[in-house]
Amino acid sequence: METNYKKIFLDKIVKKKLVIGVIGLGYVGLPLAILLSKKGFKTYGFDTDKNKIKSIYSKKSYIERIKNSDINFLLKNGSFFFDFKHISLCDVIIICVPTPLYKGKPDLSYIRKTIISISKYLRFGQAIILESTSYPGTTEEEIVSKLKQKFTIGKNFFVGFSSERINPGENENKLKTIPKVVSGLSQNCLSIIYKFYDTFFNKVVRAKSIKIAEFSKLLENIYRAVNIGFINEMKFIADKMNTDIYEIIKIANTKPYGFVRFNPGPGVGGHCIPIDPNYLYWKAKKLGISANFIKLSAETNIKVINFIKLKILRTLKTLNIDKTKAKILILGLSYKKNIDDLRESASLKLIKLLKDNNINKIEFSDPHIKKNIQTRDYNIKLKNTKLTTKNLLSFDIVVIMTDHDKFDYKKIYKHSKHVIDCRGRFKTDHKVSRG
Image 1: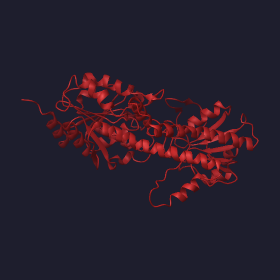
Image 2 (image 1 turned 135 degrees about the vertical axis):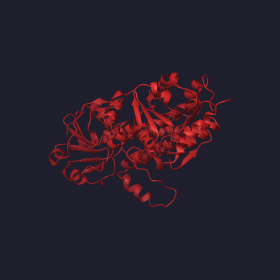
Image 3 (image 1 turned 45 degrees about the vertical axis):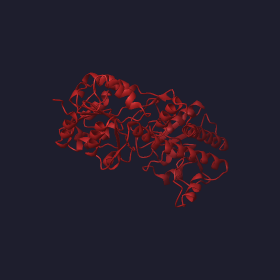
Image 4 (image 1 turned 60 degrees about the vertical axis):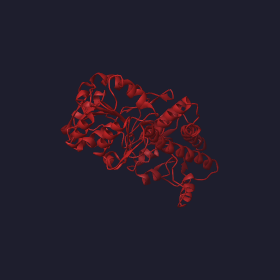
């Protein structure tokens, strides 16, 4: 008699006997693992970064907005490993590994290494779900093609894609309230993957195919990237016209239809906006299509850093300050406010650009950064300065790059000689210019 693996899987969900494995315990995987474990399911976490595993077993969170108490809860319902021997014990395996760019092209090495590492531990009856963002076709090309020689997908093994919708600093602790998009290679795959996520999320949305689900994730992010690029370009024009883009947006936003507000900024950071659109641009180019909006928005958002650099240089010239002797304070290193996330940080890019222009007396202030500045692209030593009256007065220019709520803006305005405000915290006047 043929084993009904679908029925076995669904029964395990109902009886809470399903064992869940999450590969990649970063900004996506860790909060997801916490959500799953809070529902009473045994959860195994896997990450090749041994420091993350050590932190978990020390009951310490390595992501600022994840509480130590949640890490402690994780340990009650799961175990965590930096190798993959225990993958065979998992019924469902969720892949949340990075998908960065390498020389402007998609870098799927983390997904590929993961599949290679776990392949010998895979067994009948398991499900693999990719949550890492990539171009349409990735799940089938990188996972299905590797497994179909060993398994009959849809009968004795199940594969799908579900897009992550983490908004750093906003929804890590309320993930279940965000509609969850799911897809499967076959109807059986979709059925069990839908049932799985329906156990944890308030609303689950079925996509008709894996490619549609993969594409929808990129569309969400590209929509934001294009609109941010557009509004940043409007900022360039407004600056040339000596008008304040934030005042312009405020007036335009009074229209009750046909206008969705996007604010300009010092450049885009994180993963969703600067990285993800390039995945679809690359795939479209492979198909002979030039995705001009994606390319143009990316180029515009990159130009913002140079725009701020030039604003700093012009301000120094106006103030008659030698750039080699100028002291610059960067407010905020993380890519968005109230978090400690340095991925694709516009501040780090600006600092590098300023140093390349012989401005070396640079310090920063960020209440959310309490460790060495180290990312895939940057490993630099800078002083994290406290915002005292004396310190503020010692800088020639203060640049607001990330508008953390913890900053004392009254003190910043009162005691700064000149402020370049890239976030619209202040109105422009004799000591504040827009960046």
